Length: 215
Image (cartoon, rainbow, N blue to C red):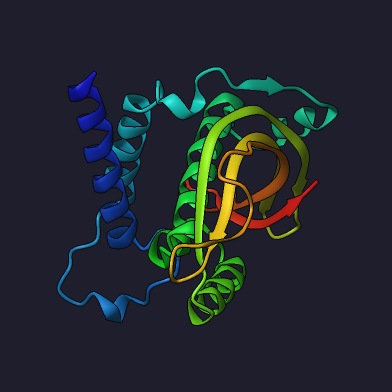
């Protein structure tokens, strides 16, 4: 088990590095990396899918109930779309976002979100740091995942809204570590709707988080 975990961790690290090299999220200008050879699309996708396969038994997706809805029919408009694979990735992004937002890890958030959503998260983090507020978030488990809505826009952008039901412990503390909001012993059952988008005219396999809301 230890070697498997090490492999997944290494895979995630490599994948994050490839994100930066390939500029797949469109957040870094080419001029910022003049001496780095960009990985080709073919090489990127090969490694990306290989790492995804290695991580498909990750704990965060085990036991998750996948719900069906009328919106699933719209997925047929997206070529080679694999619902289970997509929702597995959503579960990992959900976990990474909760951890990154609580720890003020802007770099990871920027890689996983659209520029507009990143700016909203960044502003909240900046204000929290200014006020000396420390956030702690513990994702106990994801109970259910289901696709709520699918939209294919005229310019070829697809948007998929995913309903996520999870159990979490969330608290806020001051700079002295004193609890100011929440209960460290109370597990909240929270339902979110997160929307992911992707330009279907590009070969990139990455779906970016573009909006989040509570339901």
